[in-house]
Image 1: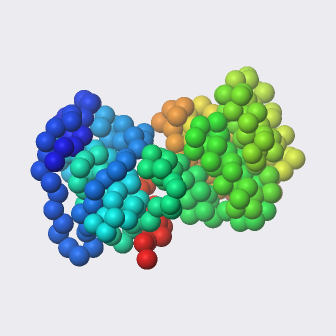
Image 2 (image 1 turned 45 degrees about the vertical axis):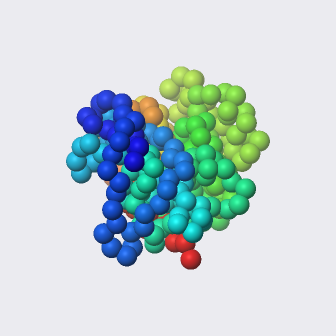
Length: 274
């Protein structure tokens, strides 16, 4: 079969022949992939910079995708083997049937966005009706989905930050009650975050940026008396992989810090195909 094969970390996958995968137990199913999205996870794994690695190289790329089963059904599934290939093995217990009318490309692209937004809010954040949610880095695809997911899950107020003013304006029309531009000075950003908390104390922070913007949020939080515990979900690192964080901030405030993004964790929460 043909596949996108990664031979060495830090190089581009190569389109070439690769042995067809085999199933090893009744829970594994051989399928025909139709579409697989290229996510930051895929890019990071190919570069060798992601915290997960392939068991061995060469390896077929594509962590998930849309596939056709032997009965002609279209399903979404996480790949046991790479999904950027003519054949792949998936866990039949985690397959989700694709609704009629949804294109293969759209169906392949949506899960990553939903895992980073709705699943993060529900599984890690345990969002409840009436929660106030601050979404840091809301102008990307996943952040935009998070704004809408938060409102659909019952958030009473949503605060969105980002650098793209055009997208911030759009977010104000689809669920964001307050927007904060990250193109302002640090002092102004801190001031506006504190004011946002004063007006509507947030209980969940969904952070897609980490880096310096996260440092500003922690500084802003450190300057207020929290009315309720705050769940801080670190989901992405678009602005940097590390931050400087004083332990005094965490020791003096009721803040719970959660990581969100392990695909094996998400696999446990995917509704199986009946």
